[in-house]
Amino acid sequence: MRGAAVTVVAALAVLGSLAPAVADSGDLTFASDETASATPSASPTPTPTPTSTPSPSATRTPSPTTSSPAPSPSTPPSSDDAPPPPEPESGHAEPDAPAPLAGEVLAAQIAEAERIAAILEESSSEVAVEMRRMDRLSDRSNDVLESLAAATDAEDAASEESSQAHRDLISLEARLAKARAIMRSWAFDVYSGGEHADLEGMLDAMQSEEDEAGNPLGDLAYLTDQRTRAVAEVRSLTAEQERLTEAADEAEKTAREARTRIEKDSERLETLLKAQRARVGELRKLQMAEVDKAGPVANILVGARTPEAKAAAERLRAALSGAVVDTADVGKPCTDETGTFANGLFPSSALCPVWRQPGERLSPEAAASFNALSKAYAAQTGTPLCVTDSYRSLPEQVAIKGSHGHMAATPGTSRHGLGRAVDLCGGVQDFGSPAHQWMRQNAPLYGWFHPSWAGAGGSLPEPWHWEFAG
Image (cartoon, rainbow, N blue to C red):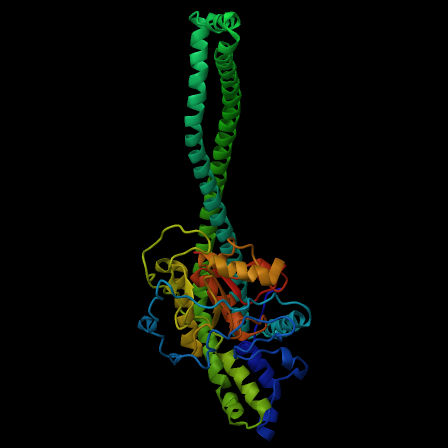
């Protein structure tokens, strides 16, 4: 089930039915009050309660309302505002990783997303039609990015397996050459007449005194054992050589197939993103027109004094800010270091800071892309994307595995350990929020996707978890 969110159309559809009430009393709440508890605001306050299924912790990361001043919607943030790279020994305290959503919390989010999706689908306005087109393109782009990431992982693993097999073959060749040398020496002795030497040695031993017979017999036993071991080792090493050769060939085949899949996915992705960017401008114009229409209503709501009316105004602001961006301009990474590092064992020099999220770091390309995405979000909402977790060191992964069991990735396998995953807050942690909808529409333009297992209908629903495909 795709996670829909409050959009301009949804907000206006609700407000349109309640406009008379605004004029009468100035006191207004959104329709469907029975779902108000499931309707997220733009606040980063997690929806799940701490005693059931906690959302990503924001205790370490300042919320958008308390972070350093963000740029106004009309002025995109400057890259000069990025914090300096962390010192080699620096890092951050790992938060208690959130548990996947389940039960009533998940059901409430899905219900709210479906309710708003129904409003959109019933609307015949231009912006609603354009939104549906954009959603379909975004979903397809997300799927292709996930497939691309899986194919890239498969190619990397197969290439490493092939390289390891070749390294093992080189090591094995030395041992095999030594065993074969012993066999050749033995064969030479046999065919050059030296085969009688063993028999002569045995006869000499039988004629010798008892105290002198031990050494010749021991030598014969040693030579026999050595030759027996040499024969067995040659057979064993030859079989291992065949196995490694087959393994290397199979791994190379897997790598070639993965590369073919990568090329096809890349072509599909380029086509989809081109179409998606082509729709951005039109959707932006339509949404801004709806914002202009909603202005008077928003002003009335802002002037309302009751908590309910203020909450409605906040939701409307969130709805009106859920527009897509015009371009996807990604700057250069903070470092050119592109070495291959083990999962969770990246040096600080191979990580880049996340814009306006102190202590958070990602791999260079992932950071550059995410920072551009966050700046686009800030240009429209006034706040950067809220991050609770990014790169995880191996010790942090071990700690989370110990506290979360099967719900956490096996240490050394998490994409957080590659600096290519983030856990988000600020509303993104709610399937039914404007922030989550914004991510669905915009993240693919920057190479970020929401994995299927983390979707509302996935095996471990985590609306906050997003990954970088490159």
